[in-house]
Length: 163
Image (cartoon, rainbow, N blue to C red; front, side, top):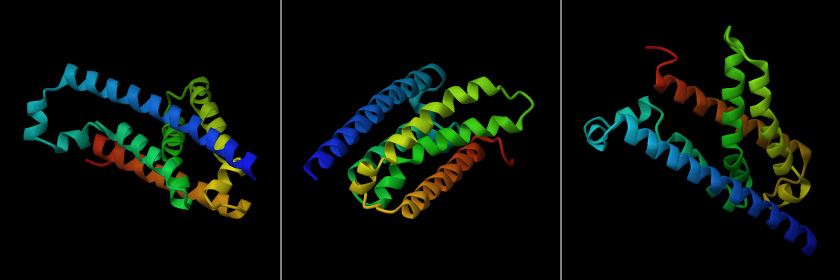
């Protein structure tokens, strides 16, 4: 039992490192983007611009994933899988356009599948109290549905759907 806890904690540490690196990169990219195209004064005058331009969504979703990593319940499992679910959604949406590039989709989907495999190992599942395969499949479906909803909301604010 002690060996399983050590392996599970090591896997959680690896996931935390990956999320942290991605969070730092996302924050740097957002800061560069904001400094290049906007001024801080614009955000004070029109804070809705942050939503319309999908600014700061990726760092927020990454923070939610990191928080989910520390919540050792089923909700933590779902929160941890939000970012990969959103990446899957953004990889699949271009398939419905005439400019679909099959090779670029696989470059995005393969790491997500590997991440899902890592998260769904029995050792990690036991940390989040998801003991049966049925519970794990349900939690994965919840994460995918919530990720799709968040992605569609982001696309709506960006103006790709509706007015």
